[in-house]
Image 1 (cartoon, rainbow, N blue to C red):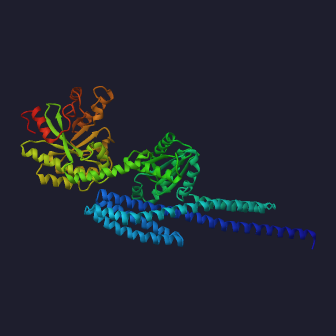
Image 2: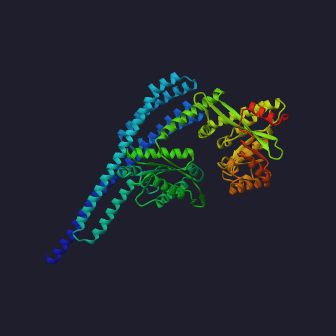
Image 3: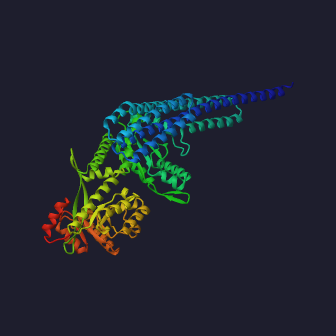
Amino acid sequence: MPRSQARRRAAFIGLGAVLLALTGVSVLGTVATRHVATTARTASLLAEAFHRAHEAVSAEDIAEQQYRLEPERHARADHADAAVALEVALKDIEARGGTADQTLVAQVRTLQRQYLAAIEDLFLAVDRANPTEIRRIDDNEAGPTSAQISNLLHDAEEAQDATSLDASNRLDKVERWVFVATLSSFAVGLGMIVVFALVASGYQRRLVRQAMQDELTGLPNRSVFIARTADALPGGPSVLMVDLDRFKEVNDTLGHQCGDELLRQVAARCAAALRTTDTVARLAGDEFAILLPATGAQDAARLAGRVQAELHRSFELGTVTVDIEVSIGLASAASGTADELVRCADIAMYTAKETKAGIAAYNPGMHTEDSSRLQLLGDLRRALEAEDQISLHYQPKVSLADGAVCGVEALVRWRHPERGPIAPGDFIPVAETTGLINRLTLYVLRHAVAQSRAWMDAGRELTVAVNLSPRCLLDPGLVDDVTRLLSTHGVPAARLRLEVTESAVMANPAQATATLKQLHDLGVRLSIDDYGTGYSSMAYLKQLPVDELKVDRTFVMNMDTDHDDAVLVRGAVELGHNLGLTVVAEGVERETHVAALRALGCDIAQGYHYAKPMPAADLELWLQARHPAFLF
């Protein structure tokens, strides 16, 4: 065989050997990478499923505590929903997990059946108001079983997080090994191997990214975020938890495709609003987390404001424009673990959502505040049942034209048997976060209408005004309750006035307007309260069937010394009169207020200049002293 042919043959054999070697390395690397990537991804998904299951158990506990404090149907419904959510998460774990996970699911289901049986007995004990039985079931059956379920799920979640992180680390090592082996193989000098090596290494990196990213947004997933947070702890990081308010309405109204697009745009805006050193991750659903390395609370609050401003701009979802609001919780690390820091930010986020503050910074008192809030709700529920703690005070409304009393506003007061008087500002906002505000409002309506009947029997006429919260205005049973109370006490509808704020109407304009029209058709008089502090939407204001506009006290109190406030009050008076409404000024405390309001043509005044809110008996004495011959 000629020497040239031998060289060519040797070259071909060498090329084939290199190709075979490279192919073997790549195949082995690909198989190893795929296996480790699958392990990492499965562990991440299982960790998320265990997290959802653990959250569902926590939700069951919260609903059970809520029912013990406030035994209403919605608490039972919340508990049932949490049990359904737990079963959904368990099915997910069962489908994705191995034999050990399936064994754990079977164990949890057995415990859950025991827990639900105990909870049913506990709910019956609550309904029977049997504290001894409640305590026995909680201490010996429901509580220990729930704690055992929670511990099992929590330990499994941490184990899967650790598996995911370990697999991610091994994935990095496999990638480096494949890359080094590939480079060694193409060192022979064959150009085609370079292309093959780049393709192979690119494929490995793609698998790495898939194992560590959220599929929808491309952001890091929960496991990666916890790991990065743990790495950043020595530098004193802050964490932001971002949750979209009423995201479910976007999915239900526009479809999941628009919901997914909204989440992608939210992810992009969060990333654009932050520094290159920060990490944005999607934890689950519409919940995002942001890691701010080496960032104190003050700078974190500034960055949270920047994120909020970015997300409050309109989103274009195809042909639809959507505006959303977000709740952001902020926590800064002083000590503890990454999980604890994320949990604190989560607590702050829920506080921001509940108080509608937009942004809330975590403080240790939030745990105490949660407990105090539940205690206050329980005390208020018992006060409504006792019928001797809640009372009404009445503040007169005076005509500026002739000084005649033309109505009163009923204001609720609570004297706690142990704590004494509790200010309305302390308990009404808490009641408004639950269905208890509906019961409180119905209590006020019942006593106000009964008082109106008593005045009628005494030959006196007086219109009584009652405030409605946003929840009450959206209650489908409100009109029936008002109709029944007026009929029961024989009070003409025109003797009752219901006051609503602009914000209450704008929470759901269509439903609120429909409810107000039904009340108007019934003959009830209607007012817009606290005008100037809400949305002030002319488009809706002119459509509402109201006959009175009440200017908020914050503008009236300084109108005699502040030019801007005087201009605002003048504008409100002119607007009300142009719409055919009677205008009432609240917060009238000085004679100079009276003179200024008369000059502006305001119709009615209400405030401490005339009288503070007082019990009905004191109001009658005040009226007799002011107008000896006055008949209501």
